[in-house]
Image (cartoon, rainbow over all chains, first blue to last red; front, side, top):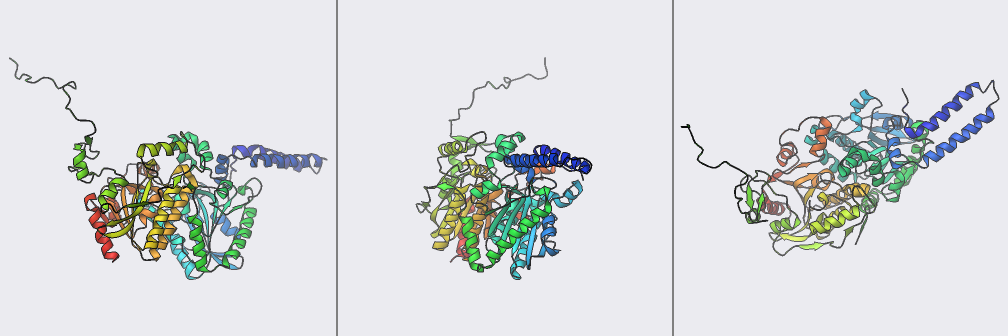
Length: 316
Length: 280
C-alpha cells in the first residue's frame, strides 16, 4: 500500500530514507559515523517538528490513514476476541466493532468505531460513522457486560454520527441520548479511549466512562474543524483557525478537565508503530482497570456522575 | 373602436401604500398573511389562518403554561465565561455581550419552580434568541441544577427545548453537557419522578441527543423541526432533496420518537393531564 505522508512528516521521512540507503552500503564503506550523525539529526528534527505541532497538524495525524484502528488494537492487545453483531432490533452497524475478549487475565467487553483503509473498506465501514443501530448494539452489549460483571473498554474514532435520512428516521439523537443516559449508571467499570477522531455526539455516544484516556495525537471536540469553519466563518477555508479555536488536542482537554490521562504515542505518531501504540495502551488499560476493580459498583456510578457533573466553565 | 378598453389605471407600485402602523402587524412565515400582533398573542403566537407556530421565548412560554405569579426563577446569577478565549469572525466574549443586550436575557435557558393548574413543578425553558439556543456550560449546568431541584423536591420536571445544538464556542465543554444532563436525568428517572420533554421549533443537535429525547413523555409542537443533524448537512451528505415533512414533529411521531404532537394552545392542559396521571 502506498504510504501516505503528511506535509510536515516529509523532511523526517526523507532523512530516514537517506539513512536507510546509506546502511545498504555500510558494509563496504566506512560511513558508520556519518550514519550515526544523521540519526541524531533525524531525532532532533523529529523532536523539533513534533514538539511544535499545530492543532491542525494533530488533527491530520489523528486521521492518518495508517493510524491503528479499533480492530488493530483489539488484535494487538487482546486474545480470544469474539465479535458480536447486531442490535436485535434493526441491523448490524459495521461502523462499530464490539465483542468480548481477554485482556491480560480478565474478560472485557471491548468496542470501538472502525474506519476502513481504502475506499472499499471505508464504504463497508461507512467511514466509521455510526447509525442508530450501532449505538443500540453498543448498549445491548454493555448491558450484557453488566449481566456477566465484566468491565467495558470503548475506543473512540469517528468523524461523527452518520447524518443520513435513515439515521434520522431511526432516531439517531434518541440512540445517542439513550447511551449517555444508560452509560452514566452501568454498575461496571468503563474506560474510554479516544484513539483517533472524537467528533461530537457521535463519539460521546460510546464515551461516558469512569476514566477517559486519550492518545497524544487524537482530537476530541463538539464539532470537526471543517464543519466549525463552514458554520462560523461560512467557508471551508478556516479549518486551521477552527482547530486552534476549538482547543481540541489531548493536552488541551487534560487542562480542561475533560480527559484524565494522555496515552503517549511512539516517536513520529501512532501510525509509525502499531505494536508499540497497542502495548502502551494495554499497559495503561490494565493499570486503570486494576484501580477501578477495587471500587464498589454504587460508588463507581456515584463517582462517574460526579465526574461529568463537574465539567464546564462558568462564573456566578 | 377597440374591442375592449382599459377602464382602470395600470397597476403600478407607486399607488398609495396602505397605512400599516409600524410594529402592529407581522407577516406569517407559514402562509404569508399579515397578522395583527394582538391577535397573534391571543392565539398563543400561532397563525389563525394556517396554524403556523411563531417562535417564542421563555417569557411567552411561562405566561402560556404557568399559573399566574407562581414562577420563581433560580440560578439567575450564573454567567457564561469565555474559557477558551474563542475567536471566529467575532470574539465569543463579544458575542455573549451582544446576545445579552439584544435578547435581554442572560443565557439560552431560564429555570425555576412554578405551578401548573396548582401542581408544583420544576421548569426549564430555552431561548432560541440567545445564540441560537445553543448549549454551553451554563445551559448544561442550569439544566443539571433544575434536575437536582426536581429530585430534591420530588416535583415533576418540564424542559421546553429550542436549540440549534451544542455551543461551538465552548467546544468540548459544551459536548460534555450532553453527558452531564443525561446522567442527571438517569438519577431523576431512578427516583421515579416524571420528566416531560417539550420540543419546539427547532430542536436539533446536542440538545436532541441528550435531554430532549430522554423524557418519560415527549411532546412536540406541530410542525417543529426536530432532529440530530440539520437538514442542510443531511442534504449535503446524501446529495439529494429531502422528503417533504422530513424531521418535522409529525414525522417523528410517525417514526415513534414523539408521543404527542399538539397545537400550542393545548400545551398547558396536556401537560397538566399527563402529570396528574403520573404524579399524584
